[in-house]
Length: 66
Image (cartoon, rainbow, N blue to C red; front, side, top):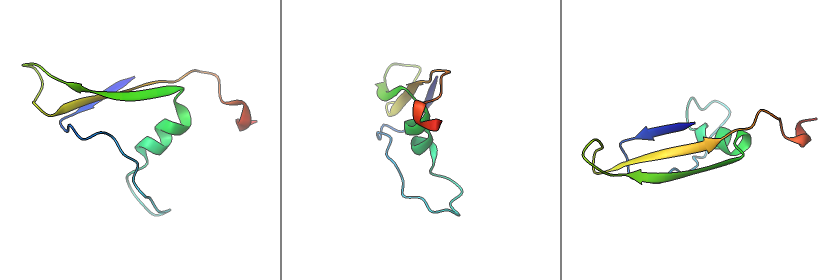
């Protein structure tokens, strides 16, 4: 899976609280993804400050989910 945005800033985890309505994306990604990373986008189709975040998620749940 890949997603992109118009910010060159690398993804970072936010501190969240139980009543937070946003900011859980990277926590979910780190929990579910087998691997993930990001890279900058360049070229005429993209703004000068864009990035892609990608991940690989297997269909087998982690063993510790019992």
